[in-house]
Image 1 (cartoon, rainbow, N blue to C red):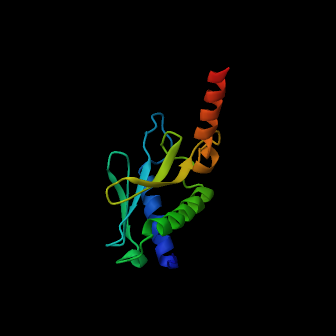
Image 2: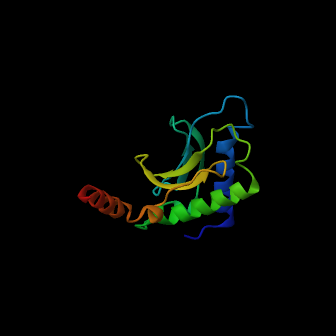
Image 3: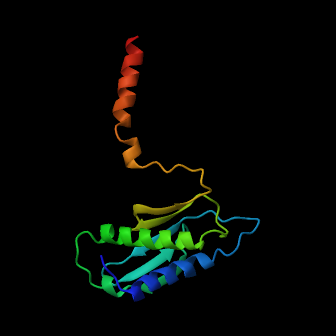
Length: 149
C-alpha cells in the first residue's frame, strides 16, 4: 500500500502524540501495550492502551473507503515500518512503560491481528512461528521415544 508523505507524517505524529502521555521515566512504570486500530471504512487510525483509553487519533486519506480484501496485511507492513523508524529515532527510549511492551495491530473488534513491534531491553526473545515450526512433532517423537524405553 502506497501512501503520501503527508499520511506518513500523520501516522508518525499520531504515534508520537500517543506515547507522549507516557513521558519520561519515573519511579512507577505503567504496564500496558499500545494498540493501533486502523478503520477501513473511515480511514481513521485510533491508538489506545490496554484499558481502552484513547491516546491519539488521525485520518489517513488513502484508507478512506479502501475496499481491498487484505487491508490489515497491507497496513501491518506500513505501520511496522513507521514504528521501526520511530524506534530508530529514539522516540520510545525514555517512556514510563514497563518493558517489554508491544505495539499491536487490532481489528474492529479489538482482536489482535499482529504484533507490530516489541520494545524490550535487548534480552527478550520474541518467538515467531518460524522458530516454533515443527516443535509439536519433535516433542511428540521425543515423548514416544522416551516412553518406549
